[in-house]
Image (cartoon, rainbow, N blue to C red):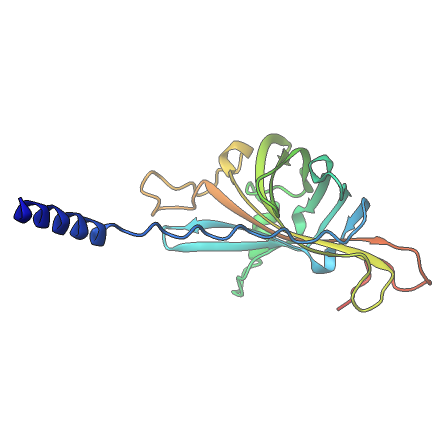
Length: 231
């Protein structure tokens, strides 16, 4: 009887030693304070970038940048889900890293790729905002490229805001990062479409990366205007 009791105790002790301690819960992301007031903000073209990328012959993602971007953010600081945004990209500001003896930028802008002459702008207009975390949201809206409008959802992160520019300029600031993707074939951009292998052309899926700052005037002495370049 004593031997059985000792065996049972040993087995229980061994089982306790083999139990894996539960993994600690990951700390929850802290909400970043919203310092900028509600109101209408203009996109700052000097501190905003819009880049797109597509896999090139299966080798690497080829990155393009659009330098002509404008837009308006109607920001609701108390209820961000009620915010909305519109943005316009000038197609003829497409900028590639190509440095050869061709004007590759113009070829993409003015050919069957983007047809800037017939469709000089691409636009986005939000239709809903859904918060996904303390500092993140899904922004759904309509994107129009080459005259074709389709829904798109962007994953957006709120980065920071200032009630007044840190250098004293009389403007409020707010900044976001956003990512998304689309299928270019849906918009009639079918040139050099890759087959199922992906190694014989340019991918149909195009990734979008946006870094955006918005500004609005605040009460104060006359000074630099919101869209003038500042550090």
